[in-house]
Length: 150
Image (cartoon, rainbow, N blue to C red; front, side, top):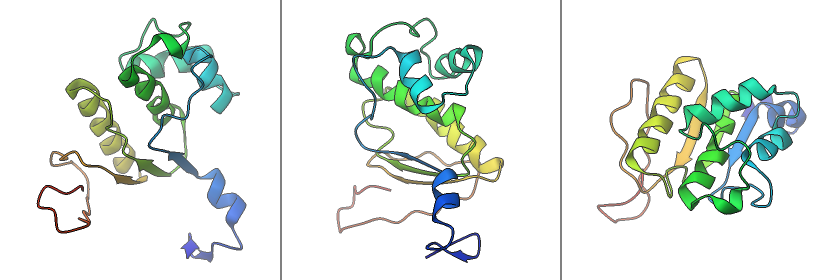
């Protein structure tokens, strides 16, 4: 494997700095607030940036609530807020649409389009159908299931 024309073994640190990975589980600490979780991942970020990112995913006003008081979909949106705070060009997302309502799914889809227009790349797994995107999209269907993931 290579990254930017170099063998991955030679540029591993650079690759990791330019990568944002979000797993199937939200990867947030339920005992912390939304803002505390975001500060953990982005310690140099300013409060205004974090509040703006939370507003982008429909969580304005939730900054100081412990995640344990939020629904699964809201916790997922806190995790996805990282997509509004990162400058990583490569995103690897495992089931990012899980537990999201239609509005949140559309918000995430628009963010993926924006990222691609800015020269970024997102690799994701999903069982949700994606609407046509305003950016190049490659789909790999696994298995013989006609309703399989994209």
